[in-house]
Length: 231
Image 1 (cartoon, rainbow, N blue to C red):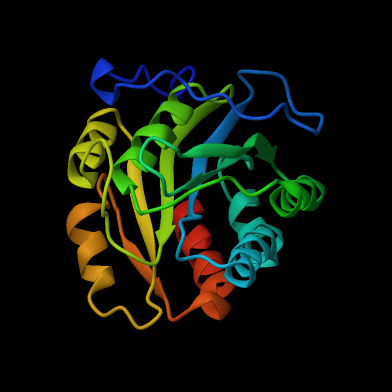
Image 2: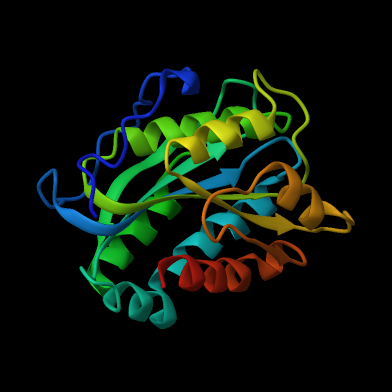
């Protein structure tokens, strides 16, 4: 059953609902029902140079506008999802760079893609995945749309390294609040990252890890991941 404002997150998440920049697009009224509220939590740490960062942003834009993703959205009971983007890296520094947008058709997806491309890059360092999960979970708790499912889609090229809370603890708190966490491992010659994310990051019903061989493969992998998550 749909739950108003998604979830009442437990105090264990330890963070107030994060504030993002004001939406640039006209959106449906608050409490509009959606099939899923999805946070794309994207690695913007120091290992991501400018070229790789642009590939990631373009990959997100390409994925949400792909016909297969739009078909998956239309195939839902309500035919609409809500999406926000978070950049993460620095301990306590995860930032909402694109606030909540509802997507029900090609025009909505194109507007979201523009927001992905245009958002300024946040300042990040290290790989504080636990802090990123806490931030994304709080963002889901503050989602203005009435959602059936809550999902965090975390992508990165390294394991959890430094943060205020280890990734498994943040994962367990989010799952206890009814959130599913999936992961996209960008391998870039780092063996075992899929297994690390499976052990320390993902959780909740049907949680899974997918892999991209590198930044050039990011759009394909994210597209396949979105279709699986939405459907």
